[in-house]
Image 1 (cartoon, rainbow, N blue to C red):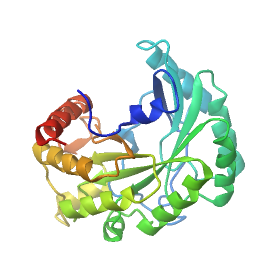
Image 2 (image 1 turned 45 degrees about the vertical axis):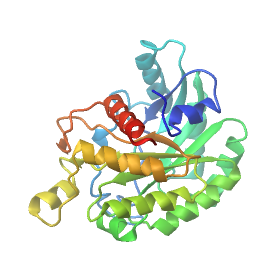
Image 3 (image 1 turned 30 degrees about the horizontal axis):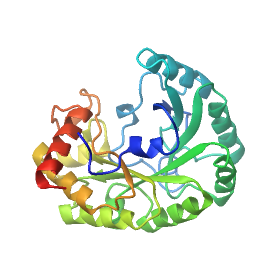
Amino acid sequence: MAKPYRDFSDFLAEHFSGKMQKISINAGFSCPNRDGTVGTGGCTYCNNRTFNPDYCSPRLSVSEQLEEGKRFFARKYPEMRYLAYFQAYTNTHGDIEHLRSLYEEALGVSGVEGIIIGTRPDCMPDALLDYLEKLAKRTFVLVEYGAESSHDVTLQCINRCHTWAQTVDAVTRTAPRGIHVGLHMILGLPGESVEMMLDSVDALSALPIATVKFHQLQLIRDTRLARDVESGLYDIPRMTVVEYIDLCARIVRRINPAIAIERFTSQSPEELLIYPKWGLKNYQFVNLLNARLKSLGI
């Protein structure tokens, strides 16, 4: 079924021929709002066990994790080429020479044709951008900033320890250097109405970004958010899958069409997930969403 929005495969097709696969890497980083640099405790919703695949462990070197990932994906797609995805925690939080060595190690692995760096908007010094600008002239580089919301009251509530203004600053310092920029946004954060979420879509649409990831807020065991909700400190929006599909349809109608939407949902391990339990795989959700978009004439 044809999609009425650009997705990540459309974006990658502009830069690569053939199928590309991201391989996640846990390079052993921390976060500045965990180690006291800007805060402690981390984001209230965060449990990194929800998105680290089995082959992704800091006990292994970057090269070893990539080779493990290649073996995992090659069973199904032997001709696959890869992007090294520095995913876990804040992957620009460290000494620049150390960061450079990790990125270069990843790019030295056979079959790896670019890197994606997940980080925070308050953790991108100009000196590192100087290096990434040079790197982007010889390989594919995408920096993905975790913004989560454009509303500072929300960011404070979830202990992000940065502001939307810092996201705008990071994006507008990065994109002009020829580095692809993506944002990560969470839908359904505490206290946010649908209109507030759509306001965030308007805000990100005004920025020079190439990609965006949306996903539903997931209430995960062993997180401060789960404890806060259980204690009655506050609640979170409880959307049915139909309500969430309708929200995503409004986002598609509203977003800058030049921005590629990488995803609308995320799936945490069943044993960690408290809410929502929609019982859908990501591809099943996308099929339902696309059918809904078609029915709405979008």
